[in-house]
Image (cartoon, rainbow, N blue to C red; front, top):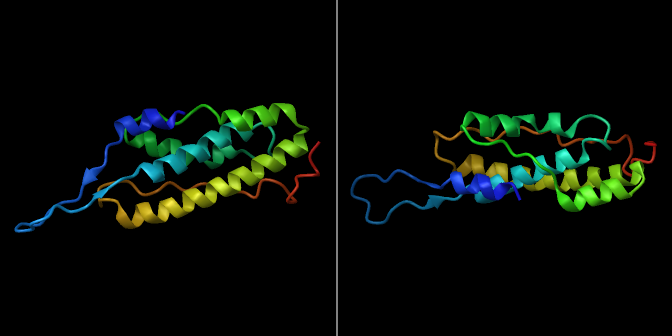
Length: 144
C-alpha cells in the first residue's frame, strides 16, 4: 500500500522536554492518523468513476498536506474496491463506495481529533475532507 512509503519518511517527533524533567515526554505517533488519511484518499481514487461528484477533489487537502511537507502525495487505489467497482453494476458499486468512504471518513475524523489534540504545535493541521453523501439515497439506486 502507498501508506508504507509515506510512513518511512514521516517519523514521530519527540515532544520538547522541560529542564529538570527525569523522564522524557511521550512520543506522538502519527501513524494511525496518516493511515486513515491515506486509506480515505486511496478509496477516493477507486470510487472516482462510479460516484457522482468527485471523491478525489473532496480529498485534495490530503494531497496538499503531503505536498506542504515536501512528501509524495498518496496515489493509487484500494485493490479490493477496484475489483468490486469493475465487476458490479454502477449503482451497486456506487453504494459500496459510498459506504466505504463514509466509514473511512469516520475513522479519519476520529484520528484527526486525536492528531489535533496530540501533535506538536509546529505540525500542520489535519486536512479537511468532503465525506459525502455521494448519492441522493443510501443505495445509490438512481445511478445507471
